[in-house]
Image (tube, rainbow, N blue to C red; front, side, top):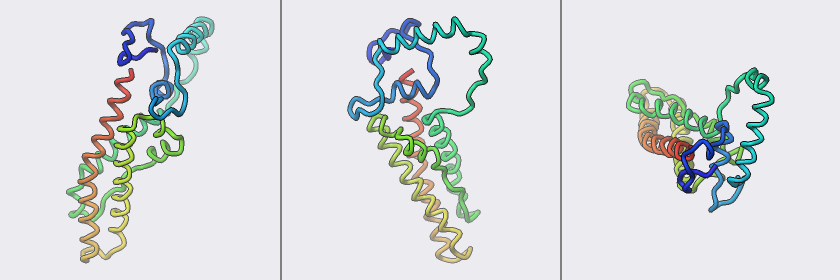
Length: 188
């Protein structure tokens, strides 16, 4: 309820059970760019007590509820970046096969649509925006490969541009994924 980074104790009394999405919402508030909901420790304590009371009275029902299979926007973004890492790792194969798999940007677009990026720290936001701006440009380069006759000079130029773009994207993807992962882990 009071994060360790703000001097909170590492004790059960300071802990509150929350799902991944609620955890992200609680810790995503940015004092420098106030948007969203800021939860105060006393408010979280009341929520915890209410939840524990519900659990005492309805434990059997709660145990019978099927688990959710979807994940929150930050975990989905991490998963998408991991997939994109696999694509960028094959950049040197593009000239041999003459094509590349498009990079995924669906979860980034979800974050934009849901306003998630406005809730995070500026450095993390910039890292994500820089990464996905390059990923979208690389996708344009990948799409261009199919517009030219295989083996032609324009085709070779498109293949080389896609390979170079994938190589340039690799460190940005790694950095963004690591920053998101660290950000989520530090707030635990």
